[in-house]
Length: 410
Image 1: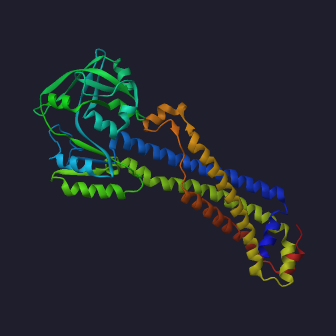
Image 2 (image 1 turned 135 degrees about the vertical axis):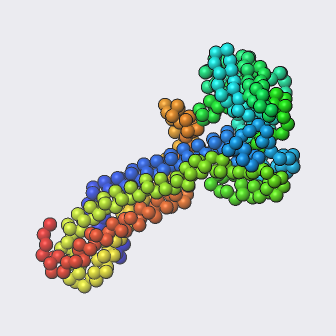
Image 3 (image 1 turned 90 degrees about the vertical axis):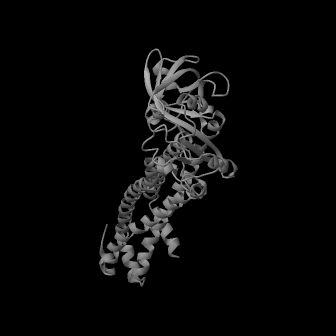
């Protein structure tokens, strides 16, 4: 009976109730869309970093990341590589020979990280072979091929077939180098990565360095959600059990702690956005309910005079705000879910912000992400806020005596 009365009371003034509902629905849609946009941007940033830079796991010599000397190769990498190739959770592994050096053309010179890779293995770990803007990926043919980024090519005035000279310091401390031919040009979502990396064949680089071994084994899992560390932890323990002393096995979050920090803070940022919205919504509901309650002061006084307990009067006001918040929250979540379904297929084109996004390694076509639990959290938060918003208006009525309430005029 009270629920029916509360619903009818809401629609006594349909314009006022409709305006508040519309405000709640469209405001909630905007909030969820913003949350989905931020979550999608963070997820895209982390996915790109894992795909291009860190992989899911990396094996290196202990201390190599802090002091990347060319002679700091992995201790006995063969057992690790053999085990990774047989592990069903591992999609691919790439053993890399890395060194800091210089790439020079007739026009200019740049410092780069020279990545000596096995072409087939690297193409399975990173998507570089599928992101060539011109030319071809590395293979076994030709003498000293190199694949550079489109940004490096533009700055050094290179094109396909151009000759560049790559130099670096070998294990004995002597400067060594050779001429390479540009085989292909690549472009990644990260401008910083493009500025600082190029690819050559691992054997060519090892011959120049006069050194065998590899500095890094990058591992990509078959299926792994970056928010769920269980697969990573299980594989790490497996590798540690067979790795020789002196090697370190690190997950992407340890390699790029800033990205791990962004992931941990994403829930906080979404919570702040939702908190600002529900605060504004709660104040709006309080305002509307105060107006409604004061307009019906005599009515509430009459109900208490004929015997309705104050507890039921309180419950009636509570039901009105709860129905208002619940109905508005349900409509807002439903509209948001529909919008997210559309954007999941079309994406949000941010081409106009391409330069700024590239600095953070984010794609220009972004797909918002909102999990089911987030929809549920938003709905429950809105409903609870609406319930709390009933306390102050209800208190104003319950403080009055029935005879005083019936004598008031509004």
